[in-house]
Amino acid sequence: MVLSIAELHRSKSGRRVFWWLLFLLPLLPLAWIVRKAIEQDLGADPAQTIVTFLGLWTLRFLFITLSVTPCRRLFGWLWIQRYRRMYGLYTLFYACLHLLSFATFILGWRPELIARELSERPYIIVGFIAWLGLVALGITSTRGWVKRLGRRWQQLHYLVYPIAILAMIHFAWLIRAGYGQVLFYALILLLLLGYRVGYRVKRRQQVLQQH
Amino acid sequence: MLIKQARDIPSSEITPESVYRQRRQLVKALLAGGALLAARPALALDRYTLDADEKRYPGPDWLQAQLRSAKAGQPISGEALTPYAHVTGHNNFYEFGLGKEDPKQKAQGFNTDPWKVEISGEVAKPGTYTLEDLLKPHALEERIYRLRCVEAWSMVIPWVGFPLADLIKRFEPTGNAKYVEFTTLQDPAQMPGQRSFFSTLDWPYVEGLRMDEAMHPLTILAVGVYGDALPPQNGAPLRLVVPWKYGFKSIKSIVRIRFTEQMPKVTWNQTAPNEYGFYANVNPKVDHPRWSQATERRLPSSLFSPNIIDTRMFNGYADQVAHLYSGMDLRKWF
Image 1 (cartoon, chains in turn red, yellow):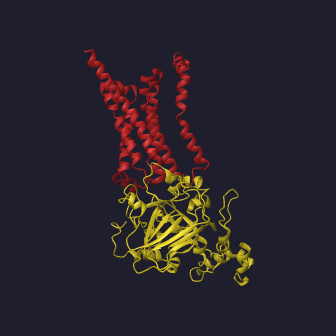
Image 2: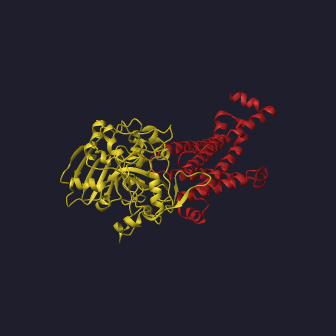
Image 3: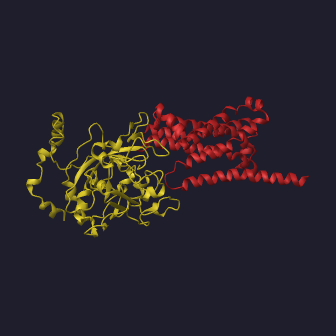
């Protein structure tokens, strides 16, 4: 399977087919929730259902994006690297939908409510900062910006780690009772971040040994 | 048993079918005359018409005569009932899971008959009673109340029950009884939420009221909803309904009613004292630390025209209950 994907990427048409596949897959959750909304099958409180759903998928796409590098290194999936930006942008896409649906379906775009939420609620503020960070990363994700920023581009995009932690805090602060789900996601984030720490430490030791 | 009880009702008590069929027209006519409040006829509660695929919960045989003779409730003008499917399918009942649809899915096997309730503490007549005995002296009536969840959604629900005050008087609380404490069943074998390793709540669930709140005529013990018995997910077979307080005060599946001198240690307040007070009166001016209480989503809320309405002081029951809290700082005693 892994081999066949790598082989697929050797031909231009193979790359194209795979690109389209990976491009369309992340639209499935959106299609699913839109269909449920049209069928009015989102339960008694569709506003809450849709906002929670989009928020959860934002977090999932963020984790998928963060797992690109570990997958490449651990399994040697070189082809996966070319989809990292796509999934980063999907994270931003779902974050925007999450925020829009919150403003529309929960707050009804009432200015006084929006102002209060953004100034008084720690979990909203934290989530909003995470979203601003994603916007910054999204805007600077183009080739032009990569060139323009040079070395600083990588430094800027390390922001994804604090963004992920803020998103996790945003999620955890919403819980009324029962931390099972939050712990599950926190564990995944811990693995994703822990891998990077471990990798750095190992690299450093290797460099030290060489000298 | 059902037949025997039916015979006990004198025929003079039974509303002739012709009158009963016309009750909607009668109510409308009274409304038009502006005479609804002045003279509301005590009509027996009809069974609501539901979609064929809705599951009904008729309840035990012994409850039928009481349910059928319940007096119909007064609708809240301008506020439609929340449909049955949502009332029975969108529930917070953490004993059966954290999701809103968990209680409906996981409570169907919940055994609510026979049921016993312990009356204890500062009362002249403590004891353990079967629910049948507990209910026997009480005439049931329908009460159509708003239910405002602390999570900022709300419903309008036609409960069937009786004033808690009537029950309290029967057991003769002593002069030391300042509060009433209620306890939900603890039975992890039947209640998967009580087996959850990650729950932050301590079981059993406990709620409480000040004596004057418990004696208030708006406070009821409910045994039914929508003309039938309570479904398990709604707190069968016996629950509290306090319409001017956030929904979590209206404790479900009660097994103990205890009269105390000290303020009961209630579950949510014990779990997160900065978020949930003992009183938990609906108050649009005092926000939950994490979200606004100024507005609510009246369910069912359609996505494309979200039914966001302003939350009212004491959930719209201020005229009846505000005096209970006169002189109290409601920011402190939230």
